[in-house]
Amino acid sequence: MTGLVILLVLILLAVIIVQIGKVNELAGRIRGEEEAYYQGNDRTGLWLFIFMIIFLVACVVSAYYYKDMMLGYGPLKAASAHGDSLDSLFNVTLVFTGIVFIVTQYLLFWFSYKYRAKKGGKAYFFPHNTNLEIVWTLVPAVVMTYLVVKGLVVWNDVMPDVNPDDDYLEIQAAGYQFAWDLRYPGPDGKLGTTDFRLIDLSNNPLGQDWSDEKNADDFLPSEIVLPKGQKVRVRITAKDVLHNFYLPHFRVKMDAIPGLPTYFIFTPIKTTEEFRQELRQYPDWQVPADPTEPDGPQRWETFDYELACAELCGQGHYSMRRVVRIVERDEYEEWAASQPSYYYSNIRNTDIDPKKPYELYGAEIKARNAALNAAFDDANAQEETGTIIGLENVFFKSGSAELQGDYTFELNKVAELLNKYASMKIEVGGHTDSQGDDASNQVLSENRAQAVKNYLTSKGVNASRLTSNGYGEATPVADNNTPEGRQQNRRTELKIVSK
Ligand SMILES: [Cu+2]
Image 1 (cartoon, rainbow, N blue to C red):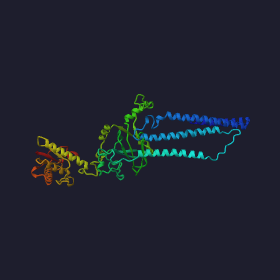
Image 2 (cartoon, protein in one colour):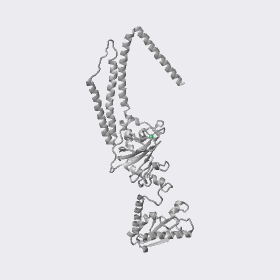
Image 3 (cartoon, rainbow, N blue to C red):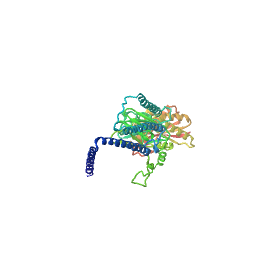
Image 4 (tube, rainbow, N blue to C red):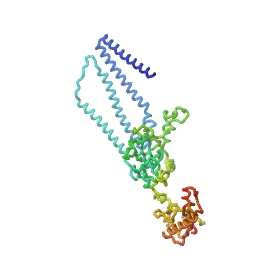
């Protein structure tokens, strides 16, 4: 119904305009065609000039009025170290194009007025003017050169890659339809290697190569959290189509291209909280964030930096928004420490883990060696004897007392420590789970303890310092009804008999 009314109104307007035209035509005929023609020209010229004044004033006033909504002005100053230099480029360009805009608009409308058709007026024949040619070639050339050179200087300033010895944090952002997979390096500070052929949407979204130890501690958080003042290098990749890694408040924007890794380096200089406090000064931000909840939090309180995709990559493009939080260093450390490693929480000891449970990364071996050092130092410092040191990485073939020969680092370490504390006497104790019959478990535990003793002897520990004992299934430390419990019960322990 409303549509029909609007249509009727439009038809009516068209009829009125046609009728006014006819009336003018008739009036012209009455007054004499020529005079009406020149009067019409005078009027049009004058109105064009008036329109120009209103138009230019409106342009300047509206640009000024809305400036706080634009990046780079008012509350939206750059939150990164390089941001101001990019903003200054935009400002310089705005000044030059602004001057050209005002001058050309003025000339356009002023000429239409001044050179309107007048009675007896005659066109001036103006085929060529060398001075004018020089001016309008040179001026744009000089301005363009200035803009290009200044742009290059800023580009070279913003875009160089990091030096290997710089202090920087490297993270990865991989875009896909329609989200980002984010990856942080974990405590080792290094991102592990990836290979797109290893990508598995449910078990390895970034194609991390688990044989690379650097991957073990990498974590995949749901938001970007960064410490203020830290230089950050973002490794930008895409898994399907073209995306764009865009952090508007940090003036960071880079295409994410399938098959061609890109990067961007920036240093955030304002925490989220500091930026909110800046926004708070502006009336536009002092209104309720949710208009239906006038007493709820204000706009500035709910502000978050964000990661957007700036490429129209498909229907769900808008949903690639991710929150970015900039925090103080302490808070960042705490957050990073609380993030679980993807490998340890999703891959380790599952069917898809290419590493066997008894196959360890170098860092794990290092940590275990340190723990053994501490355990022996501690046992040596104790007044009493009887301290028990459990061995964690001693593995036997199933149902047998044959050691898994490749993974004997822990026993080598024990031998080294026994040679260090040369007066210690040790009992090696073997334990089994409750599966199978008692008698054979008893024999198995004795044989396994004996095997460990033999191994230590072969590494130079005097046999007179070592005894071995099998405890069978008699002293479980965990529930024998679960596989995990049984695994804990199958164990080898060292007891300090004397020092
Ligand atoms: Cu996208």
